[in-house]
Image (cartoon, rainbow, N blue to C red; front, side, top):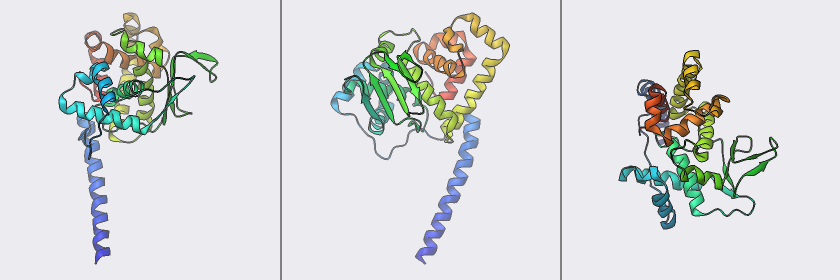
Length: 265
């Protein structure tokens, strides 16, 4: 009898999962967002010093409601717990380093239900620009999918937040690459929505008339047109650094980025 009950319960749970998945997929197509974003059985909190860094140095966090601040903090704490932070060239990983890097990632993914990446397992931090043997050049930062690592020069990461509204933010740029790769290679609802909206953005940008207007506007730096990956990273920098100007200059593109990230300023 117990075996039959467990079998029935298992079949019912599987049936519910299948029905839920189908319904949420349709919901995502219709509304460009999952059923829910934030649900956590337990909420993690940062320690006092980590919380001080977040409050003192991360403007986006301070713009949130009290309820969303708790969700944001939970995600930051989870990110720090999930990924290994490695300091290179005698660089010391501090609470400030962990919190600001984790917060940058969480900011980009705050509108997505799945905010943890499977394509990285470590964060590598150098004190300043570093030499990369991969392409025999000095770098400020990079996403290396082969090593499952995101890499930063801390000096340049900090400049991205110290100089505001210049649309140059190393942390946002490199995490945009990680998110792009994740969104194109995962099957969760948020990734599917991200991928669909990205395809829409790519097709609209590749239209000759739209591309000519973008290039001639000089709004996005020329580096954005290197390839589709750099273009996406640059427009996400603009989206967070100067959203009002972005919306004013290219309202349709701005709206599609907002839908892709399920994010509203």
